[in-house]
Amino acid sequence: MDKKTISAYRQKLSDGLFGAVLPFWEKYGADPVNGGVRTCLDREGKVFSAEKSVWMQGRGGWLFSHVYNDFGHDKRWLDMAESCVKFAKKHCIDPADGRMYFIVSDEGAPFRKRRYTYSEFFYIMACAEYYRATGDEEYLQEARKYYRMVLDIHDDPSKDPYKITPKFLPAAPAMRGLCDASVLTLVSRTLRQADPAYASEYIANEKRFIADIYTYHFNEEYGALMECVGLNGEYIGHVSGGRITNPGHCMEAAWGLLREAEELDMPELIPFVEKVYEGAMRHSWDKEFGGLLYFVDVEGYPPQAYEHDMKLWWVHTEALIAAIKLYRVTGKERYFEDFKMLMEYCFAHFNDEVYGEWYGYLRRDGAPTEPRAKGNVFKGPFHVPRMYCEVIRELEKLERM
Image (cartoon, rainbow, N blue to C red):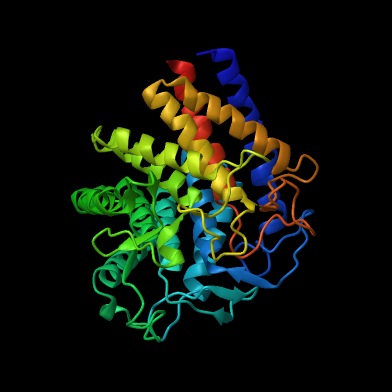
């Protein structure tokens, strides 16, 4: 291990996080009039749509609380976090049933609501991390309340207070998705850190959702973590959705499981994580143009999603975290070589040296889509700064080894 190289990467990312990424969102995302964070931003940070993503109020609330908790108590970061969580609590909850909206106006008027519980997942994370930062019991109670709600809905969908036409009709293949198990593991861990009084409950749920991932979703024949499988892990190959692997979700699951393996003393997960990571790289690394494809059909058929061969920011941030964590945990040089390759690709194509932050979307050849965007209702202050935080910590650990 070349510690000079490790230190150089750590310094590069530290400079980028505090000098370009966080300041971009502080300067252009903060809404001093209405509160919350605006994420529909063009390359220069100009707002191009007067709507707010509810996901991003939760993700932004978590991110800025996390940076405040772990990287120094700068009041600017706490102010951003507070603005996000308070906007979400005031404007993003439907009083009719307690479920959360998906998109609201800049002022907080509801625009759109979805059946999925991801708005709630990210709100729980924000409230829990904000509680860690402030000790404000109100937000711990919010996190606990919504955690129990989403678990109830996950375990028994009939308990969902939001009554809506089912997405699929009875003839469609019944499937389980990777995302719920992966994100609920993350949500449970966030609460475990904030709420030690109920640590045993959170750990039990972490282990339950981890078991769902490794029991059902890895397909040995194709060497891939599948996005959707049958209820008992069956490969559903006769429909396109059953053949898809999503490298971003694979990488996010990989590094999340690796962290759980260390924190919960589950070393048996490490070989599984290596299989997940290596399968994702093998299936999705673009040998012609570099970078990771967005969706891949493991049988080589065309995916239904038209954006399947684009290069998206968050897929690459998750891969960077997974590669450097695997290198630290296993000591295998191939993971550090992957990390260097990913860093080179990301800073050549996603990073904007002029205005800060990363572009969200590249065409397959690595050119940004036009007009260039830094955010929308799906991209905000989350994946990029979270990656910087996680990788900086990994590099610091490597420097101390």
